[in-house]
Length: 207
Image 1 (tube, rainbow, N blue to C red):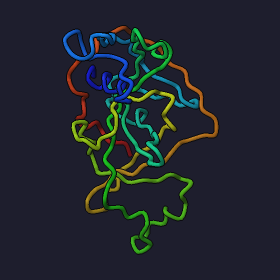
Image 2: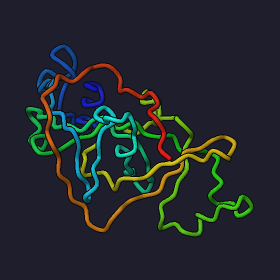
Image 3: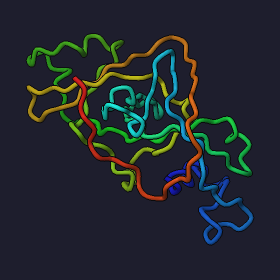
């Protein structure tokens, strides 16, 4: 996660804010702090977002969220909610962050084909999308989305199901958004941030 945090703070290459460690980067920049406050859950519009790493039932149902990158809606599983107090970055004292495994949008979709019997394209307000089944973006790929974003950039929580009768099998999601947006979090512990890549293995599907 430390490399993803480094990338988050240095999203603008013209205005880097931190260096990766004491041996890498501009010595005039503060080194990345390897500790964070880890949270059990967050409430967004009254709905509880529980990271997959905190789920007692080993299900991703309450961890699935939607965020926008430009005009592109993207869905993903929240793997961690945390506060990272980084010297030299005043906003880090109050900005809650989330680590997300982004689902891969499917190149095949039955949603806009009346011949298949699906008519959801006639109701865009439902925010229905399809995704590759049990597939996530590879964070090492150049066109992948950032692993870490602020919690306040989450548009809403979403519900996910499975289309078993399509070939290939697909995940299908619908939004659970509301007009207003508020959040509340519960802190659990202070932890050292692991430098290993985020956990992207499959969690149990929801139906």
